[in-house]
Length: 410
Image (tube, rainbow, N blue to C red; front, side, top):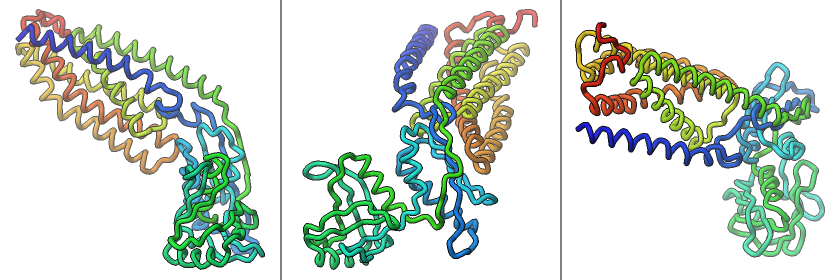
């Protein structure tokens, strides 16, 4: 029994060390690793102002909501990580934060374009409205180059079929408001509602046109009230300071647990590595965007993980002082402290859920990382830490109680 527990402990340590070593590169990869927010990665901060309607009708909150929904769709179609889009009803504005944007001017043009889509014949007459368009996607052409693939609704497919039959060999202009977006030539009648616009030099160019075609038109015209570039250097400096602060905090926590709880403290420190590894991989898997408030939430959840262990270990020490063996003390300590730690963590989890639901931007980032940390804390504390302590006690059942922070004469 003793030898088997020792083998299990050694194998577990080696497994965790290997997992940590193999996780560093994928998690820290600048492109495919954990996503960084605007405050850490840099990007652009935009404020779009709704312009008064030409007919004098007031701009309503409903107009702002519709514009926000369309802009959010355009941002998501651009593939930008952590798009934060917020409404300001009082000033009739939409506030946008885009992390990692390399060409902010192009992004601004796409986001603020009113983009009423029409199809026009060579004489400039509107022959088809954008409402008949179901979808538009950029992609690789069958022969060469890049294309935009169009899909029309059932009614739109019928109209488009009649239109392309009449315009064989002629140009069919695609307009956004009065601006010509593309002017392809109709080569054959398209009767199935699936069209292809060729002639794009890059996939990005085709994808941007597709975004504008399918995202619909804004209910109001938007102008740029503010455009501010956020430098990555500021974010890197803040990230480094946060990492240093977190590292110092973890060192103090490790020392505290070792001094006051001895062997259980070492187990708790070991469990923190597993806890951190699980949390970071969850961030990576679900593409959680890490911001400075998010880092604060993560560090706070580390403190709660330690608090979980302290409550348990104090109960274990009480059981050992009462005369129970180490094995019985561990089992009884976990069982008796279970309800206490569950109550404490569930109430904090409720607070995190509330902040996430009612908050915006940075508050949501803080709440999300805190909530994930709490759930992982409960999992590692109830399962992993408890099992490791069982193996430790099983490896040496006659271990002196001082190794559990309890003196012989206590």
